[in-house]
Amino acid sequence: MLLPRILTALVLATVAISAIFLLPILYFYLFIAVIVLIAAWEWCSLSEIDSPVGKLIFLLLLIFPMLGVTFWTQILELVSVLMEWPEVKEYSGALEWLVIGPVIFWVMMMLLIRKVPEELLALKLKKRYKVFIGWFVLLSAWMFLTKLRAYYGSEAVLYFLVLIWVADIAAYFSGKKFGKDKLAPVISPGKTIQGMYGAILSAMICAVILALYYGYPFMIATDFGMLSILTVLVSIYGDLFFSLVKRQNNVKDSGSILPGHGGVLDRIDSVIAAAPFYYAGVILIGRSVFS
Image (cartoon, rainbow, N blue to C red; front, side, top):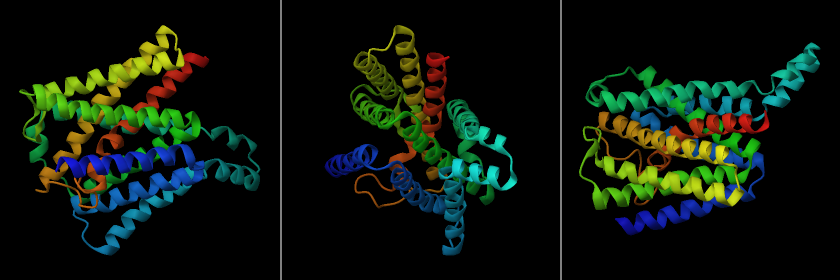
């Protein structure tokens, strides 16, 4: 089981890195959109959307906002010309504020999973709430991962993904070697506190390597260290969130498209949670540098 998982991970990493550095920005938007839409199709089963028409509507509810975000600046410019409101152009960065919502959501979920996992597992949400949560987290992940590439470049995206991948590997092996205390046994019995510590340590190492490579001043290096650690923590609890949803639906995986990994949603669950948080942190660190 481990060999197919490793081989699939290597193929996925190669495809992802190639897309990050080789695709023009609009094609990168499309590439991430396709991945998110496949994950959205899998979420439909977890949120009890069984009919093809219902699934199609859910996908369209994601596609239209994606198009709006992609062409946001052009839309504002068109509005400013048609309505003769030149000041509308000043709101081209208004979408940045939307990162606050998903950051609050994931921090709240991290605290709730940590404090009241049994109550969350027993919680029975109505279908419309499940649909909204899936729409919200998937659209947020797409939006801020693509904006990270558009505004901060390919290397920023690569560091973020490497951070998550390395943390996942470190958590797995440190958990296998030293794991004895369960992190959230009612949700995911395989995850341990020692595995989480291994992931945190890997985040610190990644941050040190990044700071040395770019020659960051001490304060910026410290900021990136804290951001890396917190991003990894959010990613761990993002994984637990999707494990919670799958356990509520009595399924092990969200799908079977990826050998050794299950579905696309199983593979990108950590990224979905961590992307808005990391993007918000990069914004704050950037402002501290340029202000």
